Length: 107
Image (cartoon, rainbow, N blue to C red):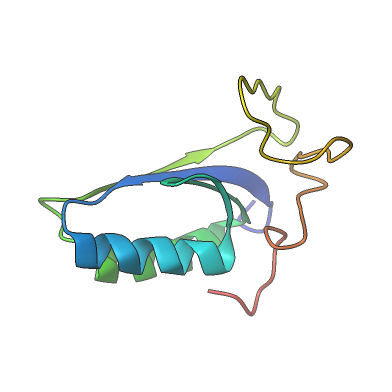
C-alpha cells in the first residue's frame, strides 16, 4: 500500500530561529499551512519518506521536534474561531487544495 495517498498533518517545534525558518519555508513550498507550525499535506509512503529525509537535514535531532500524523481520507474537521478557508472549500483526502495534492515531482 505504499502508493495509497492519505492526508497528513505535520507539526513542528524548532528551537533555533535559523532552523525554524528553513523548516517553515520548506513546508510552505509543499504543504498547506493550517497554523504557523501546522501543515496539511497528501502523502504516499514513498513521498512521505522523501519529505522526512529532507526534514531530518534541516533539524537538530536533540533540540527540535517534528511530528507527522496520518489522517483518514475523510476526517471530521472541527474548526473554532477564525476560518482558514472561505465558504464552500471542502478539505478531504480526495479533494485537497491544489497546493497540497500529490505531485511526484515535488519534494
